[in-house]
Image (cartoon, rainbow, N blue to C red; front, side, top):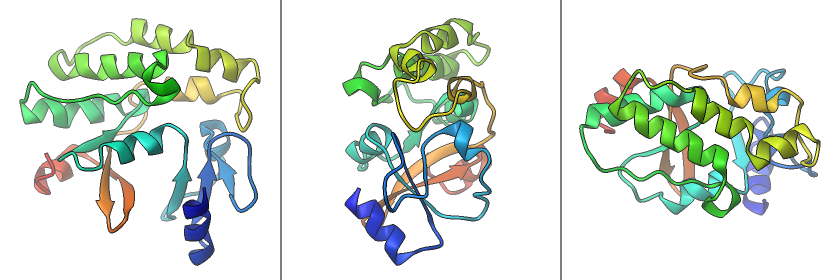
Length: 187
């Protein structure tokens, strides 16, 4: 949190967000339902989360790091299919690697790599019935919106993959479409 707040202090026009309840110095929380009302176009977002950020940093030396969710499933599977490699590692970040919603999403994307027409229904059901989804629906977790689960389970809402890479000392996440992934020889 200290590093995120220090970045925000140096760049007051940036947006700082975190998971859980809003904290002093942060502009908002990591809630799709709350974020959809903000205009973040062209703005830099400093994100501090307890799972996804930690997971991306854990594999920062990998040649290709894609941060994913159901909302970018096909855009994530596409560059993995293009690599034509039978090797890849999915890092399940929630609940110390045991989050069923994360595991369901990873398994869905992995299946889409080899079978583009994979039906999402079973994977979405598992994610919707996960402990995290139940806690969000019951209001157990703070910093959430009632639409968060539904928004997270929208298949292929966005046409880009989320590529994470070290830029200086920071892990930076940028949206990339498949042609730009190939053109930049990231895959």
